[in-house]
Length: 325
Ligand code: PBG
Image (cartoon, rainbow, N blue to C red; front, side, top):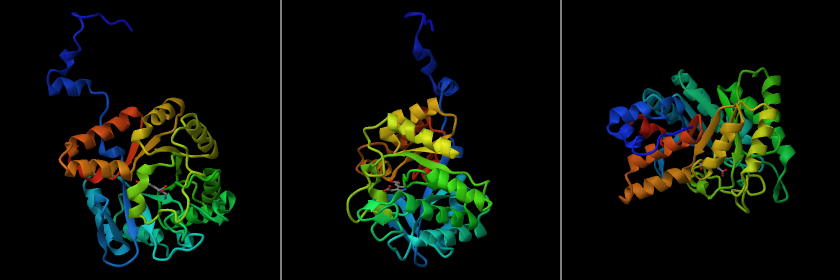
C-alpha cells in the first residue's frame, strides 16, 4: 500500500469529531456478542454477592429465573451457567443427576424464560470433594475415566434443556466423546463450544471463591495449558476442530490476545474469548479506589478483545455494559 507522506497525509482529519470517528471505526461492540456467566447454588431464596466480584451474585435455583429474565430484558441473548451443589463427592455425580443443581436450574429457567440461549459449563471441579476436574487416580486426573462421566453429564444437560454445552476441563478427547454421546442420544442439534486453549491461569482466583472450586491439593497444570505456550494453543484448537467442536474458546482473554488473533487467522470456526473473573475483579478494585475510569476501561477492554479477533465474549461485565451500548 502506498501512502502519500506528510503534509498530504494527515490522519488527524479522520479524528476531528465523533461523527467522522464513528464512520471510520473498525470494531463495534454489540450485545449480540456477549454471554453472561451466572452462578447457581444450593439452598432456597439465596441471592448473595461474591465478595471478590462486586456486582456478581450467586442465586439459588428458585431465584435464578427472575435474574435471567432481567438480563434478557436488558438485551442479553445468552448466559452460561455454573453450579455449586450441596453435596460433593469423589466423582462429581451431581453433574449427571436429573436432580443436580444445573439440571434443576435449567428446568426452572426454561419454565419462566423462553427466549434466552442457555449454555452450560461442563466440568467437575465445582462438584468433586477434591476440587479437580475429573476422576482421580492417586493424585492424577484419570483422563479416560473422566471422559465416561463427561458423556453422562452432557446428555443430562441436553435432556434438561441446555441449548449448548461448553466443556472446560481440558481432558484429551473430550470434544469427540461429548459429540458421540450427544449424537447417540438424539442431540445432534446441540453445539459444542470447547474451551480449547484454556491456560493454567492465576486470573481464575475470584471464580474459585465464587464456585468453591479450588483444588484441595496441587494445581491444574497437568491438564490446563502453560501460559508460556502459543503454538500449543493452535494444536489444541486443531484437535478440537477435528473432534467436532462448533466454537472454540481462548481463556483468559487479556493476557492471551495474541492467541485469539492466531486462532482467528488460522481457523474458520467462531472464536469465543472468556474475559475471566480476575480480569473483572481488577477493574472493579481499581475503579473502587478511583484509580481508573471503570466504565471507559470496561468498554475499552471488551472492544479490544473483539478487535483481537473474538466473535463473542463471555464476560461478567455483560449486564452493566448492556446499559452503555
Ligand atoms: C472450570 C472453570 C473455571 C473457570 C470457568 N470454568 C475455573 C478453573 O479452571 O479453575 C474460570 C472462570 C473465571 O475465572 O471467570 N469449571
